[in-house]
Amino acid sequence: MNNTSLSDLTPVIFLQTFILELMHASEQLGQGQSQQLIEHIARTAGCFFEEVYRSENNKKETLDIESYIELILGLKNNIGGQFSLSSSTQDSITVCNSCCPFGDKVVNFPELCGMTSSVFGGIAARNFGYAKVEIAKSIAKHDGRCEVYIHLNPEIAKTRPGIEYRDNWNQDTDKKDFDTLHSRIEESMLKIWRKQSKKPVKKSQPPVIIADSDEMKQVLQSIEVIAPTSATILIQGQTGVGKELVARAIHAMSERCNKAFVPINCGAIPESLIESILFGHEKGAFTGALEVHQGFFERAEGGTLFLDEIDSLSPAAQTRLLRVIQEGELERVGGKQAIQVDLRIISATNINLQNKVQQDQFRKDLYYRINVVELCIPSLAERPEDLPALVHLILQRMSQKHHKTVTSVSREVMQKIRAYQWPGNVRELENALERSLLFSQGAELTELKLDVGEPKTRITDWKQQKEQAIANVEQTFLQDSLKQYQGDIKKIAACMEISTRAVYNKLKKYQINPDNYRVKRD
Image (cartoon, rainbow, N blue to C red; front, side, top):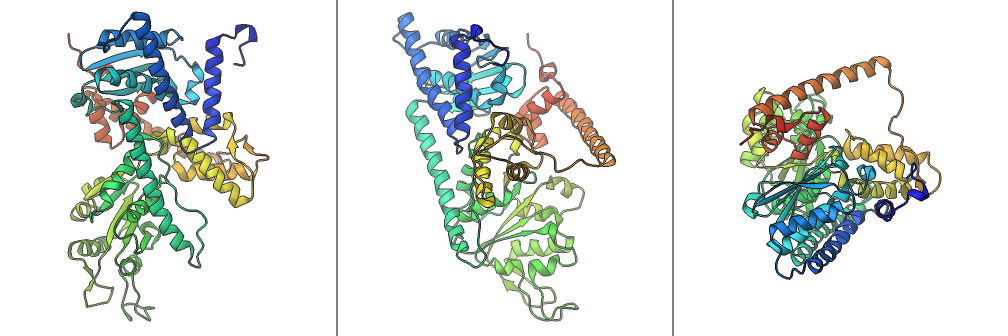
C-alpha cells in the first residue's frame, strides 16, 4: 500500500488489505486461530457464492463439471485472479493463474492458499460427493504462478497430496476428531509433567506440541496408532524439530505412561563409558568401579527408554542393545548374570541411518530391530503453517521467564520469520526469539536478531564453500533423478526421504522445471 494513493483505492484493494491485516492480527492469537479463521471464511463464503451462481443461472440441480469450472474461474477472475483451465476430465480438474487476488503480499501469508483450497474443495464436494485439492504451485510460496488440482475420484486421489473434502458435516466431524486427539495427547503429557513437577527438580513449562500443519497432524495421528503397541520406534528428523517431544507423547499415550520415561543422548556420552552408563557395571569391573551401578536400561524398567542420536553407539554397545531387544535381558559390564528387563525402546537420529548400515558403520540387524515403525518429523521449513502458533507460544514462555510483557511480533518481524529457512528448526527459532525479546521494549517485538555475532572471514568462506558444494551435489542429483523417474516428484521425494513439497522447493531454488523431464503424450 506504500505506493498506492487514496485516489487509487478500490473495493478490491480495500478488501485485500483488510484480509491481510486480519490474518496478521489473528496470528498474534496463536494456537491455529489464523488457519481456523481462513477455513471458516472460505467455507461460508463458498456456500454463498455457489448460491449466487445458481440464482443467476437458474440452476437447481447438482452442478456438472462445466458449470463448476465456470463458477470457480468466475469467482477468482472477477477479483483479479487471472485463472484459466489447464485440463479437465471426469476425475480431475486443473486450473492455473499468474496473478493472486490478494496481490504480491500473499507471500507473507501462505495460509491464504487454504482459502482457495476450501472454496474449490467445498463446492466440489457438495456437488460431486468428494474432492481433494492439491496446490502444486503457488505464488505465496514464490513459485511465480499457482497450479491447483481438484481431484474428484477418491481412488485416484489417494496417491496424491492435498486436503480432502466431502461435505460440511464430515469436515466438521474430522476437525472435531482431530481436535479431540490433540487434546488427549496434550492432557496425557500434562499428567506426567504434573507428576514430575512435584519432585524437587522443578519443571518450568509443560510440554506442548504445535500441530496446525497437515504434516504435524499426520505425526499426531501416527502417535495415536503406534503408542498403544509394543513396537520399537525410530524417529527421524533434523536437529531441533522436537524428536524427544514426540517420544514423550508416544510414552504418555501408551500403557507404560505410569512408569518412567528415561531420555539419554548417546552422542553426549564418551565412547569409553557408553556401555557402563547404558547397561550398568559391577563392582570392580574396571578401575574406579567401587560399587554396583544400574544403567539407564534398568532405570527405565517398565517404562520407555529414549535413545537420541543412536547412530553414535559404539559397535560393542550396538551388540548389547541388540541382545536386550531380542532377548529382553542384559548383562552389566563385568557381570556374569543375565538381568531381565521390560521396557520400550524409542530411538532417534538426525542422519540417514540406512546409509550408515550400507557403510558398515551400523549393524543391519539392529537397524531393523529398532526400526519396526519409522516416524519422520518434518523440518520447520516444511510446515510454515505452524510458525504463528510456535511464535506465540515461545513469546509467552520467554516473557514469563524473563519478566517481559512481549505478547506479539510486528508484521515485519513475522515476514522475516517466514522468509528464513530455520536450519536449526524450533530450537533455533526459540533461540532467536529469546535473544530478540531480551533487547525489546513494549508489548510487541519489532526486531529479530538472527545472528549472534559476525563470524570470522575464514569460517564464513568455509561455510559458503560447504554450502555451495552441497548445492552442486543436490542440483546434480535432482536432475539425474528427474531423468530417471521422468519427472515423477513423488518417486524423487521417496528416494530423497523428504516431502514432495520440499522437492518442489528445491527445484524452484535451482530453477529446474520438472515438466521438461516428463514424457509428453500426443
